[in-house]
Image (cartoon, rainbow, N blue to C red; front, side, top):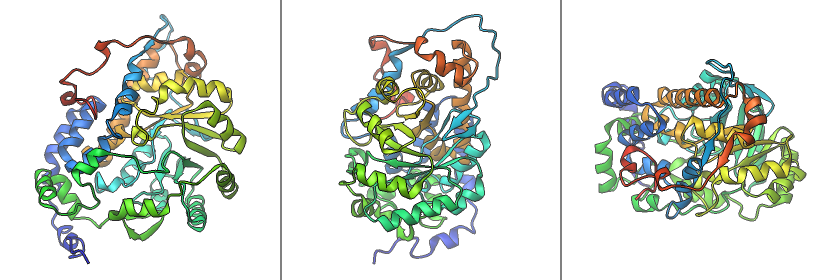
Length: 431
């Protein structure tokens, strides 16, 4: 048995010594000064352990898709109307999975939120409730379905991977229904674990392996480290609380079913019988087949550019998928979103709603609930401004008039990051 601080019960002692406020004071000061998502990214980098931040920030292989996902929005111009008679704030409300929401964007379900901040998924759930938007919970979450249900009674989507064990699948889906989840999203682009080379170089593990290098990095980030040491060890709370979160790769490799196919998807939909999304669509022909199979929502995604390197930017394939499935099938898009203008462009080009991953996780890593709320605040204000200046007063109007308002042009070197962009927080993979 490997001895570590949690097995020795160090957290039980430290939880009675409230030093968090002292260690977090610099982080909170930085968070207050953040004005955009790039700032939140730098706040997260300064607070989180290096291997944790790199896990969040990275893409697959050479991170080409990660960069392209952001660059693609730079190639889209917004051809605005004038004298539209609008004034702020605009009505940003819409429906997602048939549920009323106050914002057309939400935080994507992501695994292991407690590695970023001790509040974990509860912070994202509180932020979703605060802003009246959808909440997404990963089946590899470190907070349970019941606990999330106590925090928010708003619309919720439960994300599921392609597990081998059908009894496990049925058990998890039953818990999600009982927990008040309105929709299910099947992630289909995770049949192999992506090659995330920053994780390999950092010897990424949850919790840390207590190597000399990881202990040195922990000392550099006292706020994150005290959070980690003064709270219970993480577990996969939605699946089996006996499975420690430090065995992520082993657990995924043992349960993921690469052979999962369309017939298995039909079986899954029969077990759920509620609104359902297929998450990981990048091709029109796959979208058509997903509709024919019975999925009600197409979720255009490349898993945050963390799986197949050189997969396309999702905003680039969105119009073709909208054309393929027609106007009545719901489409969610995620990938590369860093600004409210990005959300505006996605809605204009065919998305009914937009998921954000890195932006809210940067906020979580930077400052828990306060950080996630701030990430949503930033994107909300930016989206409101973009829609107003574009001349569209509602989400419905933006979707109807959008294709005539957004034009693609050839890229310019001025669009892309210079050699100082990484320091300014452009994002991962910039050399």
